[in-house]
Image (cartoon, rainbow, N blue to C red; front, side, top):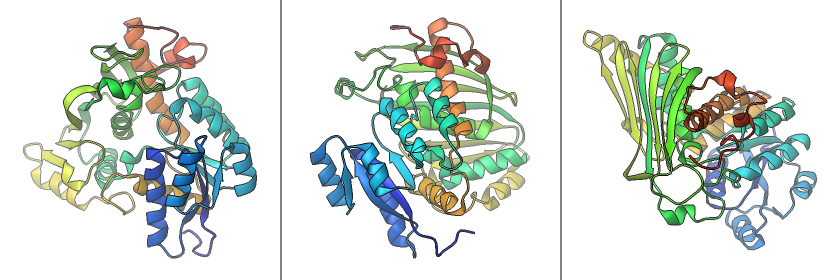
Length: 372
């Protein structure tokens, strides 16, 4: 158990935009609910001094910085939350890790597998390198993962993973969005990544992907939709769709096991009410009982949220353990995204082994290609 007399984890937040506010609210809500507080925000950084001042005032943050090196040396954070545009994650995280601070970075953690592996190699255990994938931490996902691993649902057969959202052209007119060099891709990288991470969290290692991608309606260098067929090491297959062209927005995952179908429909976060269990004929009593009585992976909020993941990150740091989500887990998701792009560009199936150095898609998600 964590030492209840331990000092609160010292947190710095880099970036002072909307996602940083979500992080700050999740951190401060936990601090207010716990005695002693598990964490305290000691510093923030942003290149926009006006935005930084407003952010620090809103969350009562004592130190505001325009330079990361100064923040690290003066504020001495234990953990840095990175809430900046994707292309900046790698240099910020690398400086933090080399400076002795653990890192929790927003998705995508980097814009290439090469950058990701550089950060994983810089981890000294501690400091640790972890990625924000908050949808792993709602009770429904934890319950499903536990029952799938135990065999209570039978063998996994087929899955559906759809992120069908809507973003208009003005959204992609923001200079860093929808570009390979700043965002690392379109909706496959920036939007569907959470649902694909949930898919892999349950089904494990993937072995092959075949995909298409297009720029169907938006004006931008990357795709605005992708469709993929994924095969898993356990024999399951999955259909994956990522879109920002869908007026009726939905995030939907469906897992068909031998003994039950499990589904969740939500948009940007789920509760227990968003999950549905359909037992196979003859399995009703056993499967329903197993779902009802399954532990939720350690207790906590039934909702998927930043707060749900942050609570586990803080507990791990206070115990001297690796915080979730580890580099090996996040890399599996990043590799699937790289595989979707590689297959769409080359028009052939792609395996994980095809994505290591010196492959072009290891260095950049578009593999050096400029158009579909």
